[in-house]
Amino acid sequence: MTQGPTQGTPPALVLDGVSVVRGGRTVWTEGDLAVPAGAVVGVIGPNGAGKTTLFQLALGLLPVATGRIEVLGAPPRRGNRRIGYVPQNYTAALGEAVRARDLVGLGLTGNRFGIRRSTPDERARVDDALRRVGAAGYADRRMSELSGGQQQRVAIAQAIVDDADLLLLDEPLANLDLRNSQEIVTLLGELRRERAVTIMVVAHDLNPLLPVLTDAVYLLDGHPHHDVIGEVVTEELLTHLYGTRVRVVRTAQGDLFTRSG
Amino acid sequence: MRFQENWLQILQTTFMQHALVGGSLVALTAGLMGYFVITRQNAFAAHALAHIGFPGATGAILVGAPVTLGLAVFCVGGGLLIGLFGKRVAEREIATGTILAFATGLGVLFASLATANASTTTNVLFGNLLAISVDQLWLFGGFTLFVVLALAVIARPLVFASVDPAVAEARGVPVRALGVAFVVLLALTVTMAVQVVGTLLLFALVVTPAAAALRLTARPGLVAALSVGFALASVWVGLVLSAMVDLPPSFFVVSVAVLIWGVVLVVTRERHGARPGEPVTGGHDTLPAVPEHTH
Image (cartoon, rainbow over all chains, first blue to last red; front, side):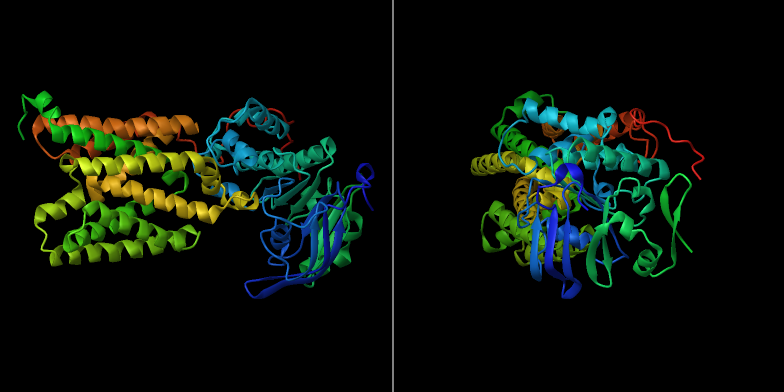
């Protein structure tokens, strides 16, 4: 089940009898799973099932109600530099004041107090992150001037600039057209190949991600489950998951995709 | 309105010297704070704090306390109250507006109870740079030093928390505490600026210069420098003009600030015409084009 090159390292995420309560409401219970290091994981489930909540647990922004959670071999804590995080819709809220380059730089030094100029090494790392996501060409533009796909690239550059071992991306393909979402998916595949980074992606639509996904965490009937992607993309499971008939189609070329009806 | 031949001599009088020093301190602080006010999308709070200062000033007159003290107490208190309200912009705007309205009502009440003469109330509403005393100058100096040093220390996490609160929080930045600290710094800035341009015109000194600077560039250091430069130019040119025609400086200070903003708007109109989502050159240079007929 695990990917070859990263065997031996602790799982990226372990839930052990975890239940989570938010605002008096039980979001989900009986979370028992282990996400192997190096996996590219689709986090799927209907609206309100608690996909973002899972990320907030991992980031240490929300405590578990019961059970034990481990992220990269340690209990979750706020400010964990080994996790890169891109929240849902967040680029939409960025004002005119911030350039792509500055936003990525904040991912590196944004939590440091005190009077200090950024060092040449820090600037080089920012340039490197921008280059890796293909955003070097608009590094000096304001975020508000960029298209949705460009903003998403910059957001991912910010998440990887500090060499995170786990990337948590919440709906990175939302509001992107077909071409831009394919490009982001290609980028995720490249990031995983370059470094043994674990990537977890919350997604509404599995199809664009299927080429790169190795695993899935799915929230079904109030519990999170984990399995390899091939076991998840089945008509029975997806139909049950989304509460509407889902068909799984394999093309002559061996490509897998799902469709409703 | 009459041109005063001896305006150069007027500029050398004690009250003009005080006005120049006091106005410069305020411009420095307001110009720097303006950058953060805009990145936090907090312009309305800056405006509201000025109005919250109004009952502080008239209340101080009522009980015979220094006006600066009354302003400071009410601005900091009002700022903390606003800071307690939610992170959501809509929630914050409503709370801020409600507190603003109540404060203004309270200010009117205090002013009438204190039977303050019309000119005292006018000074609070519209500012009177020419009435700044030596004591006030020392206080302004202390406030300025404190605000500038505090900003220097928290600048980076404050920018992070302002533009990107969700990620900042995940990265361990104390977003809530920084919000409160920011509002206190803003309250101190407003306390000073009210005495220069008054509660009604404050926006032009705390927000407008930074807004103009941000239209020209988004490089953080350059924005700060330009913003301070515009605020200083507004105060200096405003004072000279006021000496030339013997009228209160508030109008001229605000006019110069608005003029700079207007010119910058016109000059940068082309560049800011493009809306987000429209194609930007150099975007997809590293990736192969995907054929259009993907279905």
